[in-house]
Each structure stands twice: as structure tokens, then as C-alpha cells.
Amino acid sequence: MITKNVSEITEDDLQELIDNSVSEKKTLEYKQSLPDNLDADRKEFLADVSSFSNASGGDLIYGISEDRDKGIPKKIEGLTIENADQVITRLENMIRDGIKPRISGIVIRPIKVLKSKIALLIRIPRSWNSPHRVIFKGHDKFYTRNNTGKYPMDVTELKVAFNLSETITERIRRFREDRISKIFANETPVPFYYNAKIVLHLIPIISFDPAQRYELNKITSYPEKLPPINHNGFTNRYNLDGFLTYSIDEEEKTYSYVQLFNNGIIEAVEGKYLDPHRYDGRLLIYGTAYENKLIESLSIYLSALKELNIELPIFIFLTLVGVRGYFMFVGEKRFNVQGNSGIDRDILLLPEVIIENYDTAPEKVLKPCFDALWNACGFSGSPNYDNTGKRKK
Image (cartoon, rainbow, N blue to C red; front, top):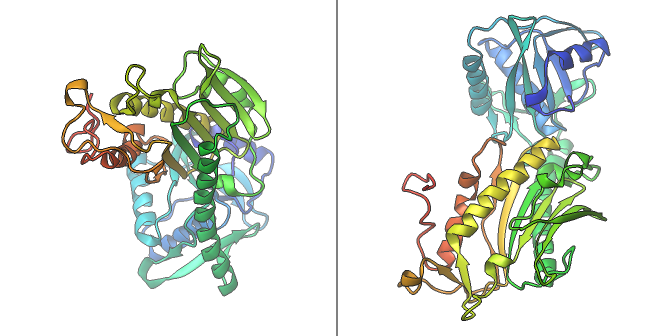
């Protein structure tokens, strides 16, 4: 796999593979021409894609000739394609209809080469819900990869794959629960003086690869790329877990922080939005303001993960801690509207959301979480979206 974001890869990067004789391996394969509509070609294509996803992920590059005996790229041949979008749609449809369960996070990108041609790079992530099966016309096989290419999975490998898929998702949920229990007990990276807290977790599935660590200097050198959810200025430092930014109020109390873990997980915690009302002590959630700030923050944090070249998918978790008895604020005149009930538990675990594309709008990602919070306060959903699910301005 080329160690760059897909959007940053150019003809020079492809030429470098040739100049350095980078051979095919578990995470990289070259093809000179695209699959056509013959059944054999389509099965071969689906086997290639599913094998990457069932193994470690990787890049499948079309438009490069190779030495078949050695697996070494020889030359950028390029593809003559009039409508790249149409070709990409065809390949996406083949993948969607020919592999089950659906593979999340595949990116197909045309790269301009030889002035008038393109190469086509397909980046396939390691899957979090593997194993994936080729189902085209009854083919019904599972494939994986090693350094010599793809091969059908045997029974033992299938058992391991099914167990691993369940284990990873459980580990993600346990990580969230463990972090929430620590935050609830005020075991935070910096002393936190607010009892009620908003907690946002971004957990890439690749983070649970035991060997996964990232060079954080792209972010740590520019801390403004990782601001706390709510701040009037902030400071930063390294810690054992990775890198931390945090905000302190005029009373020297920490009210917001972001922890970037070494394995790419982001934990953002904010307490000031849920501080009891300064005049009468009411426990209020300022729904619209908090939604807007979370949408803004999620966009920033996703940009940071993208810059670190962290693979998708990413689990998004929103949790409210210490909020038993809190009400939704909908305006002073309407605060006591019928149905506006207090939250009935200390820890509100809102439903998880999975991001499969960095271009997904943050307001769309967070809508199920916002709706669930308004549900917990006695409302049918967030009033800040219209009937089509589009956020109101």
C-alpha cells in the first residue's frame, strides 16, 4: 500500500514504485487493464477486492504493466478512458452486487498519467466485518492474501476471521465503556472540575491492530489542528497516551480537553456547556448551541485523522456523563413545554455511528445521536433538521 492519502497520490508516486522495483505483495497488486464484462474477469476482480479486505487491506492499481514472474512493475501504460466517473460507478456496482457483506470504505481514484491517460487506484481497507464472500453467479468463495497473492480461505482461516470480526467490534465498545467509566470517576488526563460532561469519541477500527501506532507530528507540530470542543484559547503537551490539548477558565479549572492517542483514537470532553445555570442552578442542555459546536468539532477531528492517513471506517460515539435530571432548553418561554422530561440516568450512551467516507457531512453523521438525546428528554427528535433529514440553517 502506498503510504499516502489516496487524494495525494500522483503519477510521480506510481513512477517511484517502478523505479524502486516495488514488487507485488500482500497489500499491493498491479494490473495493466480493467476487468471487462466477461464472467471470468468479473469473478477475478471480485476475488482480488475481497482478498484485500479479508487480509490487511491494500492498493489495487490499474494501468501498470508488470513482470508476471517476479511481480515487479515495468511501465506506466495508463488507461484510455473517456468517462472516468462512469467506469468508477461500474466497478463500484460490481463490488456492491458481487461481494457480501458489503465492504465499507473502498475508495476508487483516477490518477492522470502520460498527459492524456489515467491510472486507476482502488484502495481497499482491512474490513471490520469480515470475512467477505464473492457471490457472483454462484461463485460463493472466500479469499484472502499473502505476499504471493490471493488464495481461497480454508476452514480454519474462516473460523479465525469470523471470531476476529466479533472480537474487534467488542473491543471497540469495551474501550468506550472503560473510558466513560474513568471520565465519570474524574480519572481524566487533566484535573476536570465539571461533573456533567459531553464526551465525543472517534475510534478508527485500525487502531485495534496491536502494532498500530502513528507519527503524530503532523498534528503535534500544529496544535491548532486539534482544538478542544469549546475554548477561549488552549494549551498542549505530550503525555503517555499521546498528545493532549486542553482549556482552563479564569478560575484555573479545566473545562475542555482533547486526547489524541498514539493509535489514532480521539477523545474530546467538554463540561462548560452543562454547567448548572448560574442564576438558579437549573440543569439545562442548550441543544442547538451544543449541536453546532459538536458538528464543527467533528469536522476538525476528522480532518486531523485524515491528515494522519488513518484508514476508515471510524466509529463515532457521543456520550453524556453525569446528566441525570437535566432538561432540554428550548427557550425561556417554552422551557416547560409538555413532554420536556428530565434525563433518567447518569450516563447517556447515545447510539454509535460508523463513518465510511471522510467526505460524509458531520451534521449527517451526528443526527442519530442528536435525535436520541432529544428522545431522552421527551421529544421526537432534534428540531434542527427538516423532514428530509437536512439540517436547518
